[in-house]
Length: 119
Image (tube, rainbow, N blue to C red):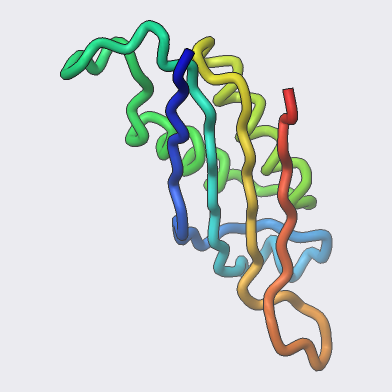
């Protein structure tokens, strides 16, 4: 039995995610990477109905990133759970969300959270 690994990488969003009021008020830039593993046993060549459109997965990510959240853990698990629930052929999802300008004095880098369904 084969499988497809669907990847969306480097998706950029300006979102209001953070523990501090200032972060949710001003917002920040984020990168989202998503990997989904889909069962390929029902796939038929050139038949979109037998696979998962990465454009549809992008819409799930974009909708979640429009919301205001406190924790990256919450949004990453929400995205993964939504994808798993919507497409039964998907068995595993990994979502990494990276905050490009974390509000930590003196930090030279980024911070991220990765959620993996590990089913």
